[in-house]
Image 1 (tube, rainbow, N blue to C red):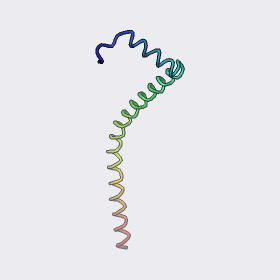
Image 2 (image 1 turned 60 degrees about the vertical axis):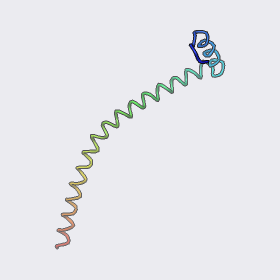
Image 3 (image 1 turned 90 degrees about the vertical axis):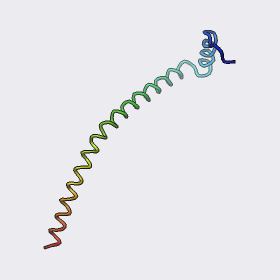
Image 4 (image 1 turned 45 degrees about the horizontal axis):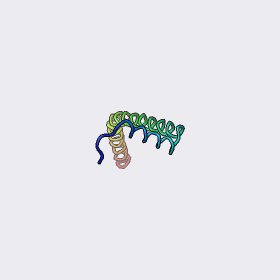
Length: 78
């Protein structure tokens, strides 16, 4: 039923798509598709850098928390 797809079937499908969407709409959709891919790549690279910065952020508040506990203890003893 869905044997080989020939050049004529592809051409007919392309003509139908052009009639339905028009040339401007197809180019707009392809532009949006390209923007989506570049946004996805940017998000993936930001995710890698976020993992590195998360490790640094976890260490910094832990030090500040221990300092604030020491201040609380010193104030309580006064």
